[in-house]
Image (cartoon, rainbow, N blue to C red; front, side, top):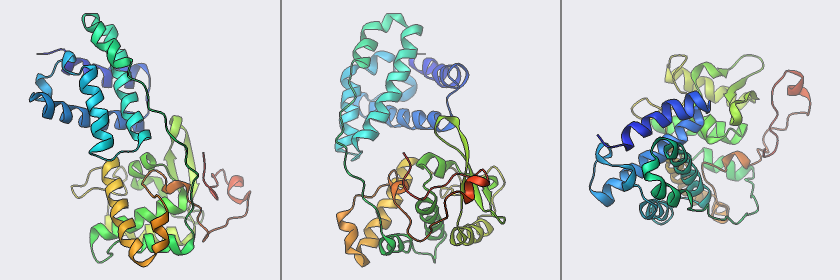
Length: 286
């Protein structure tokens, strides 16, 4: 057995969960990064993941992987940097476990984050949001799931990880409808729902018929949607929405920045939800 497999397992079980107490969202993001990296390594070396060694994941291969993310998968620079952060974290862990690979590890750790250009955030107006949430074909199960997902994303400002990790038991549809989320930094917070969102979610959950721990928005196989799957479905529905709303051609919309769009349909009075201990999202949050 090579050193990579047991070290990678120890990194996720001991390094992230037990030693660092990383959140479920962080672990899921790192796991996804390594799925992509191992698949790329196989295409480059011809070796299955179980046969790869630490030395196979050298600086040259990692640099090629980062280029692959941008050029072939069309990932943004921030997404590229997120994958690199996961790789750096693993190699720092591995440096204490396998000093015999110290030079190879040092070279990987020397790969820099790529600088990004900050773009002004654009916002969707009412007609644009209506076009987007109306884009899914609601005569199909997938279309109804996507419609509900887009409504929740646009009206609540949930992060992508919060959206995909939302469980049926986290949806509260009583008089003060809200979503219970474990957000960034392992912070537990509640996000209010307006009446239209409650109506859409109630209909979807009735059809979904999930157990309390099941995710609200499952994949075709019933599991949790991956970040890439959400990105694909958003891109698909944005393309459809542009046919009826040409204004969307001038706006860059992705699964990551949906949360930064203002919802003009709902303007809750400041303080109402804070009195209830609920978070208020009238404009984009940082």
